[in-house]
Length: 293
Image (cartoon, rainbow, N blue to C red; front, side, top):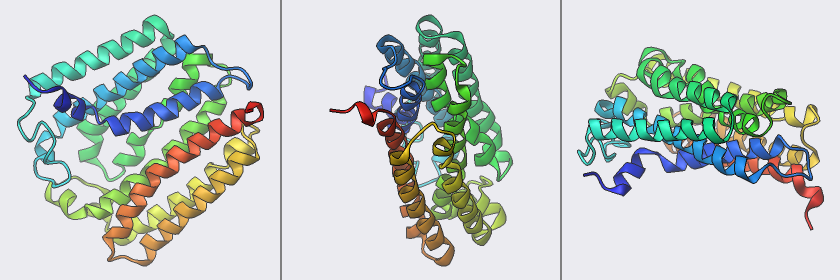
């Protein structure tokens, strides 16, 4: 029997935590301040979305077992190490998915369950099984699944009411995804070449990828202003997102100007995680700061 720690490792808990943060912020933003969303909905939506995200991660481990075994970043994962069998992982992934989707259907609403199911299929099957191995635009196209959680959180609380604002959050995460993953791909380009995964640095070269990171980061800086321009957020969010965006842009410029330094790409990848986390925290704080004691 696999250990609990190995089963949890398949879930990519740090990734799930970031997904949950964006979803929960979506829940709170869906309700006008100073009101709070229904706690029962928040709890059950959080459980359902988290379990579905964990399920998608487990299926990702199963599909990528062979290439994970050949990459130093991933060869210590439970499946390549033989700590969990493929069948055990599949059962675990199906269990998580069914419980997560069932929770959303029974205790939240149908639209959130359906959108979560579509996102799960989009990541676990369309991206992992096909796009990742088929096109260097895998991250761009597949990023739609990873950008869905703020929308899922929004619909969990408000259905489709005001969903156009949730789409702004979706757009931010969607545009954030390529420079986030391409920075990692530059850092690990030799490993992606070894396993024949057509990441952008492998198919188009490092110079082209650095340019794309820079362009997407500029676009992200602009897109991140949309919640303020749409009247969804105020000056606190504007100030924070501008500072975060300029810092991200500086990282992208460093990557562009230092083609041989893979450490900069890694630092950019790590910063991009903090960027998204802090941006969503700023959205939440800006939404409620007037009622804080």
